[in-house]
Amino acid sequence: MNPYESARMVADYLFFHYADFAEAARGLPVPESAWGFPRRVVAGLLDSSTPLQRALDLGCAVGGSSFELSKSAASVVGVDFSRAFIDAALALQKSGSLGAEVALEGARKQAFQARVDALTHRERVEFRVGDAMSLPEDLGVFEVVLAANLVCRLPDPARFLKEIADRVAPGGQLLLATPFSWLEEFTTPGLWLGGAPASGESFHVMRDLLHPCFELEHTVDIPFLIREHGRKFQYGISLGSRWRRR
Image (cartoon, rainbow, N blue to C red; front, side, top):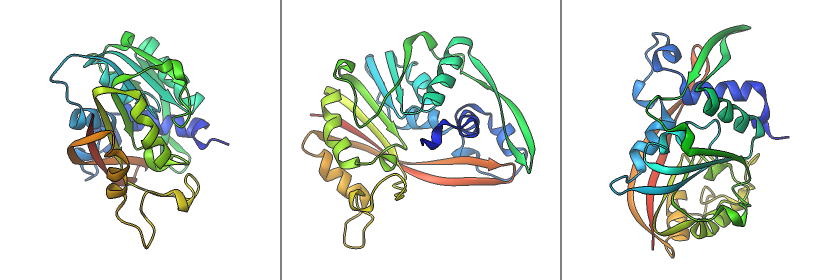
């Protein structure tokens, strides 16, 4: 069963994508620079110096980065394997806001309202349920493909990286961000990119897989916070990279 279909997970990701820092931190000394990952991953990786027509957000979850991409691209497709995530993203696209509750302390909950940034263009975004490992042929090609915190949640990341070149137009951008958090529940250890005692670093393995079709343009560390309850946060650092399709 897909763990990302539960109501709890939907609420947690709505909070991760849309909650204000103040309502997340509640005065605690947590780093504000690590909040707002879906927005910052686009800001930190996308080259928006020229007009962009089509963008693809793979593993879009509840749509935060898809809406952010709509500020720069005329058309955005957000794809996620979770029907519950896509339903939440569609609700946000329709009304601009969606209420939810997240864990605060024990059985106590914190209510909040997820709101889409008013500067986005919600009408430019299309959300679809889909599998990043098996994208439909009619999806076409894009000038920008984003996969944020997705690579280390795929069953065969090497195959994904080899096949994704077909979805990026010549001269287009592939934007990747991953903490390389390899877990057996998502990826068989033999298919991890690095992470084994005798292997190289995960990023170096990824670079070698992408090199035949892409040129590396930019890397940046992108910290992120996921709140579990009022006083417990997960802190991670994704390695962000922008690759230009040859």
